[in-house]
Amino acid sequence: MFTSRRVYSAFLGGTMKRVYADVAPVFGRLNRADFDRPEWQNICIEAHKKSLNDQIVELQAIEKLERGRIQVLPHQIDAVMTAINKMGTRAILADEVGLGKTIEAGIIIKEYLSRRLAQRILILCPAPLTTQWRGEMREKFGESFIVADAANRDLSGFEDWDRHPLLIVSIDTAKKASNAEKILAQPWDMVVIDEAHRLKNDRTVGYHFAKRLKSRFMLMLTATPIQNSLFELYNLVSLLQEGLLGTPEYFKSRFVVDKQGRILQDSEGLSEKLRRVMIRHRRADVGIAFVDRHVESLLLEGTPAEIRLHDEVIRFVRRCYKGNEALTFIRLSRMLASSPQALRSSIEHSLEHCTDPEVSEGLSNLLELTRSVEENSKFNALRSILQKVDSKLIVFTGFYETQNFLAVKLGAMGYKVVLFSGRMNQRDKDAAVEEFRGEGQILLATDAGSEGVNLQFCHAMVNYDLPWNPMRVEQRIGRIHRLGQKKDVLVFNLAIRDTIEDYILKILETKILLFANAVGETDLILSNLRGPESIEKAILEIIALSQSREDLKGGFTLLGDRLEMARQAAEQIKEFDEQTLSLLDLSAIEGVAS
Image (cartoon, helix red, strand yellow):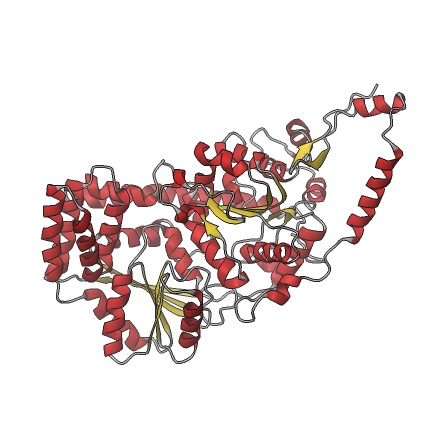
């Protein structure tokens, strides 16, 4: 009688499923001479032979990529070939931050679409990265994905899950009950999960949603597959190949020393198993030199008219924001920091649709104040930057109105200005990049327009206004500070002293160290931020609840303390992750041990 228990997995019905939890029934059939028909055995043998000869030896995707749009590095090719040929394209891509996990996933997606091995692909990622993924896939790989979150503001009303074969959805949107069943009902060929460490807890709704996804191929991207415990690694691997690491009890007894799961034993044995599903490269492995980043934040003295406008907008938000229409009030508050022109346009649009007499009166008063601002402190600072930066310059703003204001002013000064925005079609965007690469001196870019665009031929940028979500700021920097950049990167931040933007900038600089971190590390910090609301909503609540400037400062101090604690937690996670993974050999590069 055989009593040992082992777990086997197979790809059945569109997902990896546990086949046997106990070998006793199998031996029971052998004892009874209960065999399947010979034809089935022959089919299995032929299928196995075919699988051995069906490896991809040359990537069609590389040939289809346009030159100049993407620089593919050797370690990325190694990762792609390993994931496809050795892992059945069910893999965790766990390269360190900045080594191009998105490129690796993009090449695999392009390869499978080119060979028609996949037609329906779902990309799941944090909400701030949805449009970033769309831009990367469009600009670098020529594939048009639909972002479900952006397609319909009323996310519960998005009904096109079956109509769009290439879809990007935020994890939070996908796991909602109203969406989850519709997504799970779709037969996806490939699922890509970015920042997969967010699914580390097998007790969460997100984890159980991912567990139920039906997909032959799955890629999980994370630079920190182990955060607080080895059991989290077990959970992630189980999403890809249930049973690979045995039962939880077996995994704990063989690979874990302590109850918390923080001390590893038998690293060679775990490496042998993980090499079937995980690839990790360190910066030291690939031999790439990363350029430095130099950041200068300019705190400006606002004019009396600018300060008065700022304070009146704060009072208006405090008086009129009742917890609803948060996006409208966030946009109004952010436009305040961008330019009077942007704020004026937003107010005029709001007045056209306003039915509340109190709100209408407040907006009308603010509209008059915007017309009283004659001198623009930020534009004066931008002129000073232009005088000392002897190179091409990208100026980022979140708003078209500010972009147009700057285009007129800088054009009148004789600069060759190029506009780049989300309102342009692909042909116009390509033409704008080439114009900026050539004779253009200044690129005025909006966040919506710059997703996925490679601008490494420029090394200097200005944040004319700051997004409230740190990941958006990081994405701006990532347009020029990325693989392929040859010069040290210059980043200038503009903010008027003692304003909301000043307080936000201090948090970014001193609490989460955003401008010192490598691009890609911010999500780990934000995922450790305690509290149910988004950071944008948290800032709006601070503004609405503050009765004085001291209250405002105090509110931002508390938010900064929360973010600092989140950063410290992220640093501890990175340290534990690096210490543990350094014991494992997971590189796809021949002769390199992690």
